[in-house]
Length: 346
Image 1: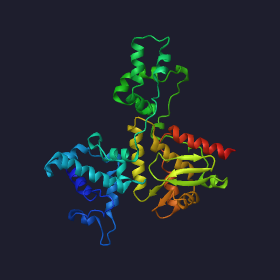
Image 2 (image 1 turned 180 degrees about the vertical axis):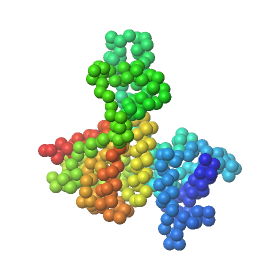
Image 3 (image 1 turned 120 degrees about the vertical axis):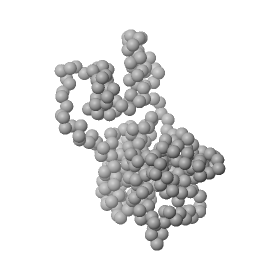
Image 4 (image 1 turned 90 degrees about the vertical axis):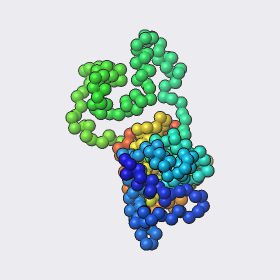
C-alpha cells in the first residue's frame, strides 16, 4: 500500500491543474513514460489502471504522505486538490470547467474514482422511493410492533442496495445464510409451490440486459430528427418537439474513455444513493448507436469527438457498455426517451 501510494503520488505530480497554461513538465522519475516526441506511451496504460474500481487507494493515505512533504496540512491538501483536478481534466470525456468545482472537498471523498464520479456527476436529488405518505398507508392494518421495525430495516438504503443483487449471491453472504428463511419470507412473499429451484450454473452467467427501447440515430435522422450538441456534463439533455431536435452532451472518446466510463458505472451501481444517471446515459448511447453510420452522424454533429481509430470503434465501444449492468430509471432522461419515441411512432 505504501509503495503503491508513493508511486501514485509521483504519477499525479504531472497533473497540477493550471487553467489556460501548458501542462507541467514531467518529473525526471517519470520521464521514461514519455517518448522523445512527447507522446504518452505507458502513461495511458497507467491511467487506465488507476481508475479501476479494484485498484483504489484511500485518499487519506495520499494526504498523510503529502503532509510529510509539505510544511502544513493546508498546503498538502491544496496540492492534492490541484493534482486531482488536473487528473479529472485529463480523463473527463465531457467538457471540464474548473469554476464548476470551486470547493472540491477531498476530505469527503473516499478515493480517486469517487472524486472523478462527483466531478462528472453533480449532486442529483429526487424523492426517495418510499414517501412518508406511502409508508403511513402501508402501515394501516399492520401490527405496530416488531413488523414495523423489520419494514424500516428492509427499506434502509444499504439493505435496498443488497436486495438489488441476485438472490443467488445474497443468499451466500454469511449473515444472510443465517437469516435466509426469514428474509425470503419478507423480501419474496411467494407461495412455496411457486418457488422453482434455480439452475446451479445460473449464478455463473452475467445478467441479461435488454437494449434500451429507442430507434438508432440513422432511423431517427430518416424521419427528420435533428441532433445538436450541448456543452457540459451528463445532465444536459433535451428533446425539442417544435424543432424536432435531440440535444445531447458533447463527449470526447479516446483510448482511456471506455475503461473510465465502465469503472464509473460500476462504482455508481454499487455506491450511489440516488438515480443511476451515468448508467442510464450509457444505456441511451448504447440504444441510439448501433452501427458506424450512427457514430458518424453524431460525430458530424459535434456530439462525439472521436479520437479512436474510426467510427466502427466508437459503435463497438457503446454497444458493449451496458451488457452486464441492469437497466435503471432516471426521470428527466426517461422523459427525453419517451418524447423521442412518441415522435418517431407518430
